[in-house]
Length: 277
Image (cartoon, rainbow, N blue to C red; front, side, top):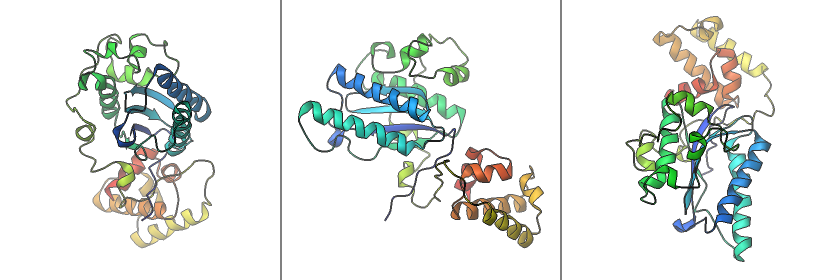
């Protein structure tokens, strides 16, 4: 069975996680950590994503990334491929560096963004490697104590969500594992084969004629005018027809941004409605 595409729309924020093959270490020296961050920075300047938080552990890493037009899959393929080549070349070896395709979880709310950022910064503490986040050098936590000290990190969003002293230590979230943190999601996005394909590269827009024909067809069959579908009416009947429009449009290959422009809703709202369809 082909792997389903990941959800993508400009502005989507993801918690990204990847582990070394057979849980082996992927960072064995200071130069490894530095090389990975350098590659991440190079890709950031190329793809224009925002990096809200990161933590590089010995055998895995966590990232909190907000993508723009370039999909997360492209960003991670470039970074992980370059790093795997670096890791193998410096050690004269061959083979897989990462155990599998990275895992990603879409952060659908501001509360989830904040929770993930704090989970990431507390990861070395929860692993028993250090007594506090200050003591782990390879994370974005120092950037939050001294905003601007790490150009790689975009601190504005998380600081605005916290609304407190930037120097204050992060509050340790209740979840102590990746599984518990995303417990309400049955599995990472790449495993949800029953969900519709929502990825849209943003580099081109499909022909809109079939989309408008679909709108007219649904309006005629349901008796609900397009203006009502675009409005804020949330009666059961209108909501059901609106969701059906989203489902059919996605199946035709239109992306959340395109559908959202018609329905006057954000791409993230389109994705949420699609999940509930």
